[in-house]
Length: 630
Image (cartoon, rainbow, N blue to C red; front, top):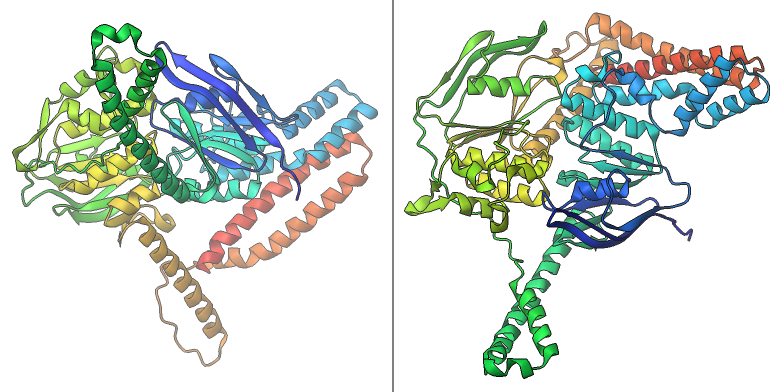
């Protein structure tokens, strides 16, 4: 069996911010080919640890060692892209061998060098497959729904910038990729593509992600940072949950024994206080250790709170044949829906299909171009936005919640105070009087969520609530929302979250349509139903094709709304010949490049090869798209 090399060694890493200890004496390694996830609560230092590993932020002590010759790439939460560079140019700023080869080749040509220098530059282009670098770049950007590649980074949205940075890391294809929340700002199709891409690359990965299906499908090892200590689990997310529960059960048993022991030792310590100086110093030291072990907070109480929201009347929210367009493109048209009490709807669709616009129309913050939205008098909206709330940076954490209300009512006449709600959402008492400006990004999102819940809404509208929340907070939020008796509308790319909470799914932009498709069931059930629809359509199309060639066929029945138009049919039939022609041209250019000695001709051939490869990729993608409907 071939031995795998160690690509990363972390030894004794410690980091504090002021008096706050994030992690202490962390020691672990990552083997070649491993796909490792780091999980921890918000504010535990996950992103800080990744930055320290990549050399972007110094640790207080310890060291990080990469294996010999290991190239690493880092997708950070804080992006550092040049605002004046175009999307495509940004990918040429990377640190991959192909980019180095391209820069060197262009420098050699600019200097007019010939002979060995130019030959070496061409050899490097061959070795790194740099001739078709742009074609590969366009393919990745296309999958991430980035098409107008001459736009400058400064004019992109936050989500688009994030996807450009992800494309840059993927295109560099380093030996070791460090990813901080790679699924943020990706729609569900993009996440599925990214899962397959990472699995096929065979690259060593260390990532932080809250996407539990992503953890399940991509990772083979999980590191949990808990109480400043690292625990390793050799398996996927399901295995991690099982073994973590066992570890915590063992820890609780140890704690219970420590408490029993502490009671006996406490009696001994209290006995004859005047003689304490003569007592065994080692036994007193042991008592302090036992006391610390007994005092650890290990129990994580699930959030089963039956909050009583404001009463909903018979009229809640009604959408009457609403239509909305943007930049000359229709997003939603002719959509009608009357909300019922307790309804739970998940909204999905590719980026740019109008999910947030639909939410804003429901909330009355955006007016439809046609139709109307009627909101009942008893509706109290709670709106969780992607951007998060705005806070007074000088507030204490508890002040930010009390600014909304001091308490919310529970079933049976009880009340839940602001401090108790903070505790339930994993803000320990020690953090209640910490300044808001010291919170991490995930902790700020959690605080924004609490301020919304303290308003005691009866209609929750949540736009990507899972971004930047750790998996433990997500579990708490899910428990809360499962007990929530009001209406819930949620846009989320977290498949696990959607599966647990929604009872039907609205799909926007399906097959380029402006209608909103309503699928009963959760997200996985929608995907299964959609898959069956595609299979039936393909089988029906195949049967139609056979029937149309049969002389006995006199009529063909079925729904033609999703089938190819006459123009598309001609395009589809001509694509196979075009693909064959492009493949032949590509192979011919590759052969010419291998035998061509004139360097100027080699440059022209390389440029032509890149263009042909790009055209071939586009033709193949178009053929696949049409073949699904043919």
